[in-house]
Length: 166
Image (cartoon, rainbow, N blue to C red):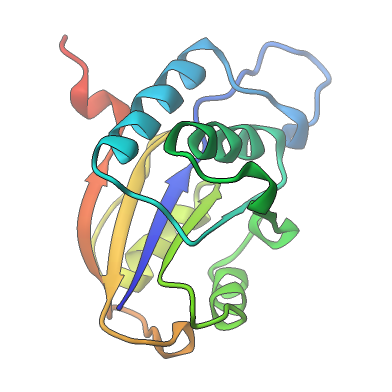
């Protein structure tokens, strides 16, 4: 069995004029949401064998923040440029390259591709993964190479606004 947790980066700031998309940092709400969602993962005992993240500043900050809270060694996070301005095909290449000794994987990246990947792998309609959302998909296979489109089962789809009391 394999589990893939797709995490969309936390909310980022658009305040700094002239700053490239790649260099945008998390805003106040993003930092708070990150702590909340990471604590939920910790409370449920979720621990990945590997965290792979886009190297964009907001994704990197999200990956490091989650790692810190759940107790994952930040130095073991892998940063893949293929996850920034990406495509489903890049995710596919990434999955196919993974060692099959890994069972649980976190991928921290961006919309629209992270939502598209979740939909393709699970066959579910996610429509849009909000910032700091997490989709956990389980696959009945022992090899990442054997993961097929529509073969995963969504175990949960969680995001900060789901827990906000209006």
